[in-house]
Image (cartoon, rainbow, N blue to C red; front, side, top):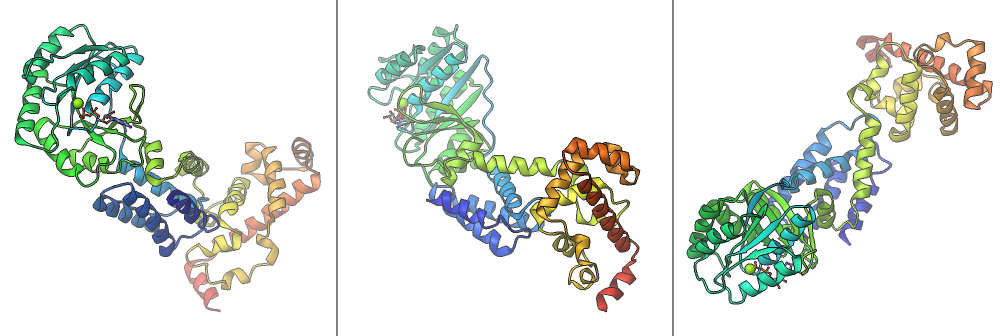
Length: 441
Ligand code: GDP
Ligand code: MG
């Protein structure tokens, strides 16, 4: 399936510290495939692709971030930007009007939303104004009954505006008024005129456009027209329990400058969810579970920390090289590769010439030694980390005991640090001219 091939593509970036244009193209292609299949509008997909490409190649991955996490984070941020936040639905007194074509799921959604509000401790009422569709009254009444909420309608009236007005009066004790409207099989002038009149009468706090998840290109026209006539504040996507992923609704969101409020996931009144960007993105991408993705992104951000904590290879060239620096560098190496490769990334240092001049073991810290060194460092005080020269024999003893490592390891760490610090100093002492001369040799 598409999700797993996207995962696979992302995984090929796992070991890389640099990302190429081909890598980004590959990831973007997978995302495009998933989104287009989910009915997301082509131009939206293209805009998203461009932003991902541009950012992935132009933005510098924060220190210690692998190419994979860097791209994941950008993909995630861009997708969140595309689907947007959930429409704000305050838990207070309000009137909500539903608009949409016939069969989109308005009446069902009205009852579902009423049920949802009642579970939140509010007192909702459904007002049914559809005088167009035979059986509309009975259907709405039954659903309201199932949701155990107040209901108003008039099966004998053919004046939706009057029903709306009387409905608000009759249910004045309710906190939340949900006004269901009629639809047509297509957008027609009389439908628009009718819904405009109802809107003017009930003066809703928010109007939601109800869209079938299977809607594709048609979403644009509908969204535009309903937005022009009554103003759309949010979208409810229905029938997400089917095969459709609801990507068409993003066109409506884009077109109306609104957000998604609710998702319908079945025929019963309980089958309603508030929209959550994360799980919706999972659905769009066909990835069963976005949790892993978001957790990775969060972890990558945590590891990077705030700007102050960012570790930049170029920092090595400035100031005193402390044990803090050494620790950060060891952690970064886990993600960035061995130190000699890290040094290659520093402008003016690549190309090997300079690196080859150094004693081999100056930069050599094996994985196992690194782990032991980290344990040792954890037993040091702040002052010792900042000024390792202050560590004498008695401190070595204390640190060894505290870390459960032999004193030998503590001394090795200190020796290693000294060697690295000297190497750094050597680099620091060089002006640009010296550097150039050495490179040319
Ligand atoms: P309206 O014409 O806009 O009021 O649409 P309805 O509420 O009458 O719904 C039309 C059809 O879609 C009905 O058969 C509903 O049972 C069905 N429906 C609405 N929402 C959902 C949903 O989330 N899942 C499924 N499976 N069916 C739904
Ligand atoms: Mg209806």
